[in-house]
Length: 197
Image 1 (cartoon, one colour):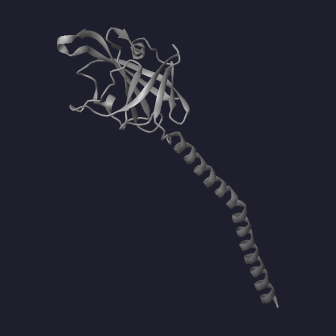
Image 2 (cartoon, helix red, strand yellow; image 1 turned 180 degrees about the vertical axis):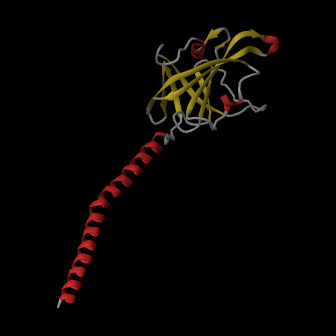
Image 3 (tube, one colour; image 1 turned 135 degrees about the vertical axis):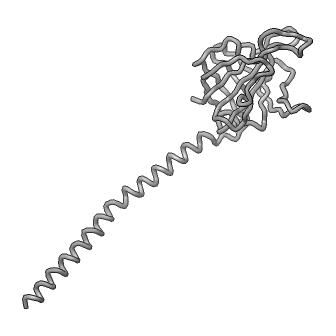
């Protein structure tokens, strides 16, 4: 009789322990699921930051309210990025990133043309912290902030400036410095780096 009672007591203890473990798992499971869902949501939001597929069509310097159209370009016969011979156009290297996406979006424009100053001449005076707005073909607009400005000799621009895989960032380039026709024109380049905000 005592043995039966002892076995019954042990059996009840085991059954109770199993029930407790199962209940604990049930209460913990929603927390785990919520964590997974939250992580997936964060990943999705991070991906959406870089999912712009529409090409850029317009750039605005917010400090001056001057706008310039953006046109896609490729490379010339020497392997250099083409720049449209038009003051009202910024050239976007179409093999580089779409501005705001992962990678380096390269945009270049003339400082002046045939004696007339263009919008990109403002890069000589632009300051860190200023904002630039870029409009896309799908009418979306994104704002970028100047985080760096550097001036290099035309033949000494670091390879990293033109590296289309570094980023995410936007790189604006124009000519500056002394103009020496016998040496091919302006001797320096001003490079402005932007980040999305």
